[in-house]
Image 1 (tube, rainbow, N blue to C red):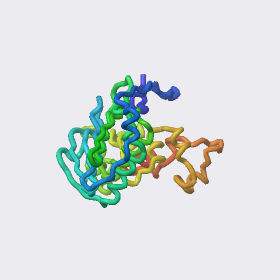
Image 2 (image 1 turned 90 degrees about the horizontal axis):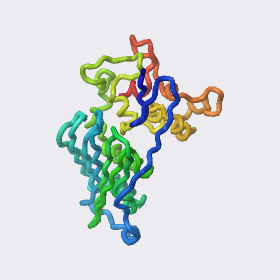
Image 3 (image 1 turned 30 degrees about the vertical axis):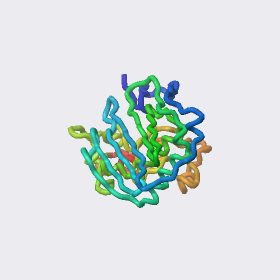
Image 4 (image 1 turned 180 degrees about the vertical axis):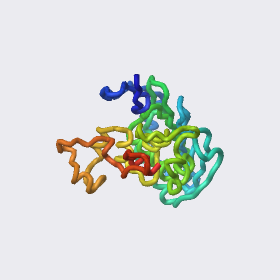
Length: 271
């Protein structure tokens, strides 16, 4: 029996249709009306947003990154990342402050403290927002938090450019660099290593949501994101309503790698 990896926590036999798992979302620590109606505090240079991604049963990157409203970024890598330990960087304070303000205006203070599901083998994302005398921490297990928070979790990673500390400088990466140590590059399987799967789910400069949905094989997400503004000329040549339906394997590809005889997905070429 061949097991085909799907989304986190999902598997099926090769050739069988993908049936999405929608576990019941469990919440705790939801705020009362008094906390929800408090006025929004003003962002100060000492304020920050912190993102923590925990280990899973596999090789999920385990790290913490913090973005200060003053533009200071601090990183601490724990497991399955290239940069173990502390690293620092700086960004434009205006961008940092804008992201922090975006979190609170989107309704961060109104969120429950925990979103989870009775499933295993997934990472937890913990977002902490500190503004003035208010601080709140939200735990998101198995991507069960509201979708807008998941989008902002990714924005934190993108703004901090955590990819450089998880995998290294993307300008210097090659297929050989991202494969797992002591493993063989298997072009026949259409994959190079688990790092590619991580790129399909995590942040990386140059990768659009459409490209990542393609790498994950998420056709419903591809159909939502594939429009003339997101995929340009491609949508005009392969409209989704055409008899040749868009397949995740076809969405983004490059010419065959030298000596492979196979086409590599965009993530394989850019990872």
